[in-house]
Image (cartoon, rainbow, N blue to C red; front, side, top):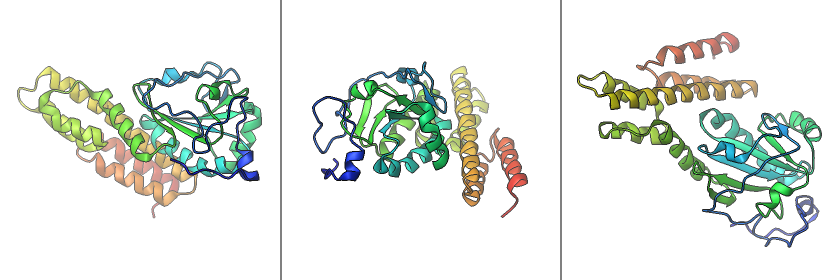
Length: 281
């Protein structure tokens, strides 16, 4: 639980006055844990993939990290690097990052995003009508929506909760798994997709492997390809942010993770393409 915040000038900048009774000082919005997340749609559209047709409910089946924030709020801005990192690292592997901006339209927000170098999705809630569904009294306020469409954490979102929902997302992509692949299912839950792919490939090639095993192995292969490509996308984002050594380390990790699998050649080619662009260390 957050500690009460003294309403200094800095704090007042971050108040979202929506015409309703103020929230307690230790809560930015209502605690909706366990409830189906109120749906949202944004008539004013937004940036980086958000338009007037975007609805929260369209993301059912994927975990969604929602941040309500204000463009000119210093406290809000200090929370944005984490949001961008999560978007960079996990948007290609299941997580949806959706920020909800109060008051301003897309054209008013774009210069700020460009200046800060961010490109996570921004939905413009100009009149605050969507934030009112969550009882937002001040910003920033974060919510985590699970793969089942229910709120898992309100006002603050932990990395552990995100990891849990990403694990559920991965399992939903590969289930049902036969009993003989229980070990594969466990490593899929852990996100060790290279190991999962090696094990499922071996099982599908074993004498007498049934159609249930080969079908499950195909689902694992599809998810593994998504994870490889998502990791490469993250590495490219790191490089564009001048974190070339970190990007190089991620490519090396991917190459090692998928060695000995059907994706080994692709992992090697992705790393080689990176080296051609950025050189060797």
